[in-house]
Length: 238
Picture 1 (cartoon, one colour):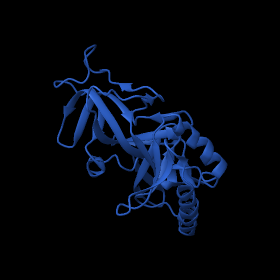
Picture 2 (spheres, rainbow, N blue to C red):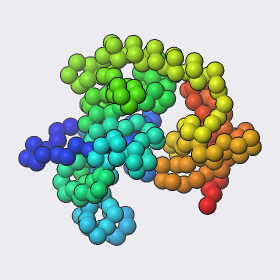
Picture 3 (cartoon, rainbow, N blue to C red):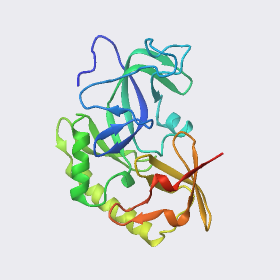
Picture 4 (cartoon, helix red, strand yellow):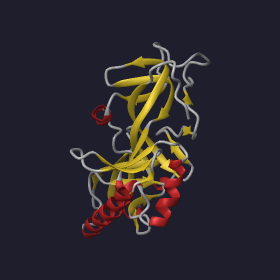
């Protein structure tokens, strides 16, 4: 993927969902390896996107702090993205005509627990030809996992293995669903636990939709080492 060199692309920050097919926007738009995502308008018919009097365009935050401020930091993998073409600037971010990932940062709980499964899933990201990182805490940043110049980073894999083991050992010791935990709604993406009662659990999706589930419908997947639920068991609340 060659970013146009006749303009200076803006570097911004965003979140993606990641599955066996690759990257998707939180609204299910597929990002294909080696070609930019081109914005189109679904609200006001056919016109060049983005436009000042419309809400269309590829969205991105100005930095990770702004991504947190608008509430999207915890709903998938995140990273920097190039924006170019027509770009509309807002207080916390941008709407762009074209976009393509610059790098990707993977939280530990987005990576399958089994290394064979993890390597298989990582292959879907390698096709984008961008640098991959494993996230650490806010102060320490991220650890390189794969570089388009040098390939896989042994230190990054060692960190991934050691930290995932510690992360999941700690998680298993206190495996009680609580506020702030992530729940994978299969086919819908990641939701955050807003309230966890003895009988009912309320979850919040990336688009602020609030869902209500019975606690018994949320199960711990030992293979994936995460909470999961079937989306059919969730009811929207208002």
